Image (tube, rainbow, N blue to C red; front, top):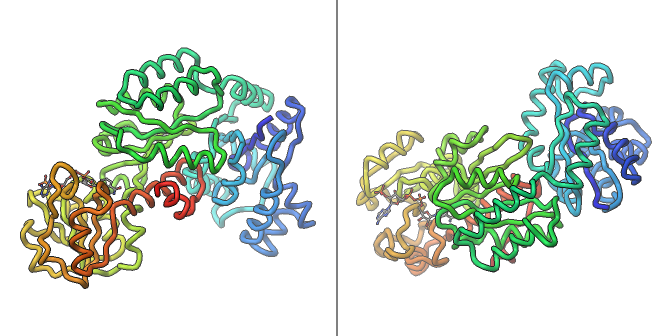
Amino acid sequence: MKRIVLFGYRGTGKTAIGTVLARRLEVAFVDTDALIEKKSGRTIPEIFQDEGEERFRILEREVIAGLPVSDCIVSTGGGVVMDQSNMEQLRATSVCVLLTADLATIGRRLARAPRPPLTSLPPKEEIAAVITRRQCNYAAAADFCVDTSRTSTEQATDQILCFLEKGTISVVDRKSAFRWFAASPLPAHEQEQLKSLLVGPPCDPLTRFLGVAGWPCGHSKSPLLFNRLFERYRLNCHYTRFWDTSIRTIMERAREIDAKGLSITIPFKQEVMAFLDEIDAAGQQIGAVNTVVFACGTTYGSNTDWLGIRKPLENHSGSRAVLLGAGGVAAAAAYALLDLDMDVTILNRTPEKACALAERFGCHWRAWDAFDGINPDFVVNATPLGMQPDTSSPLRDDQLKKEMTVFDLVYTPPVTPLIAAARKAGCTTITGTEVFIHQAREQFRLFFGIDVPETVIREILA
Ligand code: NAP
């Protein structure tokens, strides 16, 4: 039997439900907090008090690394989801169940069985604050959610057993979703894979689905990358393409197959925002979302594009930067450059759009042909120039100086005319592939709470 891991905030019922579930499935029950206490010879409050949370997390990692990988129910500490190496261990070959409860219920349960405080806040405020801080990590940990606010231990256990047997997608929905995928431009071999996973045989009801949502999205390397990562981290998931002209239809289909997450690409990064319950701060300010996570009936949106742009620039903070373009990706780039305290000037073919974006972010703007007067040490191309059908460079060769760092967000071809000319001029160059690598790494973390080493992604894409 697959290992079943119970996650959730304290007071959501992990120990009680885990004990009953283990009894009914006739497998071992393992409580990681109890193992930590046994290993250290002290109670959890004593470990926190004497040696702090850091020491506790080290002990927790040691205990989790030694857990059986099958035939057991594991109840975890409430904060385990914050540690990416623990998530990597716990998610491998496991079914992950997130237990939740409303704040009042948790408050009542904790008042009956007090635990050491996690913050200096009063109990009620602490519960709300800590759950909010961990919310994305809990969403990443969830294959299946059970709200225990109004269920008995036995009822919650029944729900988990039903999920283990049948999953969450009905046979009718599986067939209907497959008909939709089959009518989309999905390549034949990807349709075949989906057919066996959705309608079988064989058909594992616990396989979770994710995908890239766009029109078109045939060029996307995300299916290759994510499916290879699923193999590596032993996740029972499949990543496909939601290829349709309507984001509404895509969101309906994603819900129909209880998708775990979506990567959003052109042209839906703005439009998808109307279908989300919560959007992170960066997504709201940039005005675009490229990552959607579905968990416990809530749809979360985030923007990882700006992190993909920011990462290769970490050593360039404070530079004088010129940003070419004022579209969707330029907004993410402006957000990243300003986050690194760069002095940013936006140049755009349509000056009104440069002005609007600059006003939104509080930076400078000039006309497209004003480049020569700025003398930047940093240039970012956020226009499609260099990519088919217009393979020209956005800058003349004589505008490139060897002191400049040139970052082209276009990644097809990997070496664009701008990058080729910048290398010839002796500039430092950064290619658009870097953005894809870093934003995908962040996306995987939002989907599963796991930190993939950059080298692993580079090897897969090579
Ligand atoms: P967008 O919203 O359509 O914006 C395009 C921008 O480029 C606009 O500012 C537009 O100026 C300008 N532009 C278009 N054609 C031009 C031309 N011939 N001469 C000068 N300026 C021109 O597109 P987007 O979503 O921001 O995407 C821009 C590019 O970023 C894409 O083509 C793609 O190559 C790249 N991208 C890279 C990644 C990555 O992971 N590396 C991810 C996403 C996108 P106007 O305002 O005058 O129309």
